[in-house]
Length: 413
Ligand SMILES: Cc1cc2nc3c(=O)[nH]c(=O)nc-3n(C[C@H](O)[C@H](O)[C@H](O)COP(=O)(O)OP(=O)(O)OC[C@H]3O[C@@H](n4cnc5c(N)ncnc54)[C@H](O)[C@@H]3O)c2cc1C
Image (cartoon, rainbow, N blue to C red; front, side, top):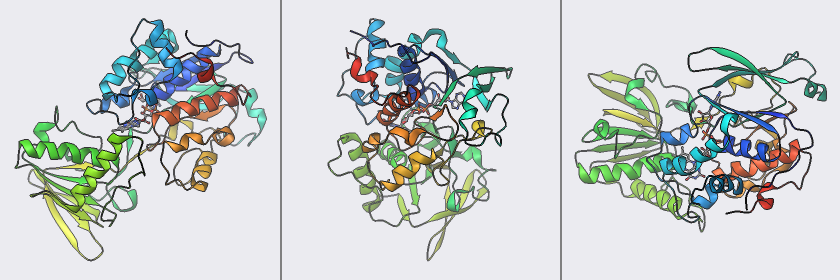
C-alpha cells in the first residue's frame, strides 16, 4: 500500500505558494513524481482553514482528502478518517493537513511570505508570450517573520495562495463605503466564532449582516442559536438581491449540510424571527460613528434606511492576491481575476453550476502565457475536491502526459 513513485520527465524545482490544502497536495504530487517541491507559507499549514476552524465542513472527508494524503497518513501510522463524515475545520487541520505537512519535512517553510516573483533576467514586457521565457528560472522574493528577505529560484511555480486573506468591501459595486475604513474595528470580514470566542461582541447586541452567500448563511445559522440563548440579541440582514429566497439551492444536492444551510437562510429571509429584520434590494451607502455604535445608511430602489448597530459582519466575498505575480505574464480574467482560460471555460459553461461539477474542467484551461506558472484553487466558490483535481491536471501539463493520474495509481488505505 502507499503512494506510487514515478520517475519524472526531468526532476524540477517546484516552488509552491501557500500551504493550504491545495498547496500541500501539489507538494505531495510533485514529491511522488520525484520533483523537488518547496512550499512557502506566510503563516502555518492550513492557516486560512484554522481561521474558521470552529465550523464544520459541509463536504465529507472523502471529498477533502486525496489518495496521496491518505497514504502519507498511513505511513505515519495514523488512522484514515471516516470517508462519509464531515470534519470540523480544526479537526481537518489536526488530523489531515498537519500530518500531510509533517510528511513533507523540510520541503515546507512556514513563516515565509512570497512577496514577488519574476523571471530572472527578463522583464514582464520582454519575450512576450514566447517559449523563450521558459529558459529562465523563476526568481522569488521571500520574507521571513522578521521581515528579512531572501531570493529563491525555481523552474516551476504553483500559486496556491487562496483567497481568504483579501476580503470584499461593503460599498456599492464592491468599493469601500464612505466611513468603512475609519470604522474597521467595528467590522468583521471573516466568519466570527459567534458561539465561542467572539460571543461577547454579539450577545445581547445589534449586528448588521451584509451579503447573501454561504458564508452569510453560516453566520445566520449561528445567530439563530445565539438568539435562542440570549433573546436580546438582534440582527439586521441586508442584501443587494431582491429575491424572495436569496440562496440558490442545488437540485438533489449531494451535500446535505450545504442544502440545510441554504434552506435555513432562505427561511430566515421569508419568515424573519421576531426582533430581526431582513432587508432585500439594499446597498450600503455610508457608515458613521454614533457614540459607541455605527449608523449605516442603506440605499434601496425606493427608500433609504438608516440602521444603528453595534457591529457589522461583512460577508461580501474574497479575492485573490494578484500583486506578487505582477512582473510575470499571467493572464487573468477581467471579471473574476482567475486564470483567463479557466474563467472563459467556466463562463462558457454557464458558471452558475454547482462547484462540485466544475472539477470536470481541466486540460489546457490551466495554462497561461507565462510558461511554468500555474494557478490552483484560488476561487472562493471552489470546493477542495476541485482544487485537488486541478493539481492532478497541472502535473499532466508539467509532465506533458495527458493520462498521468497518481490518484488512480495510488492505493487508498
Ligand atoms: C467558511 C468556509 C467554509 C468552507 N467549507 C468548505 C467545505 O465544507 N468544503 C470544501 O470543499 N470547501 C470549503 N470551503 C472552501 C475551502 O476552504 C477552500 O476551497 C480551500 O481552503 C482552498 O484551499 P487553498 O489551499 O487553495 O487555499 P487556502 O486554504 O486559502 O490556503 C492558502 C494558503 O496560502 C498562504 N498564502 C497566501 N499568500 C501567500 C504568500 N504570498 N506567501 C506565502 N503564503 C501565502 C495562506 O496563508 C494560506 O495558508 C470553505 C471556505 C470557507 C471560507
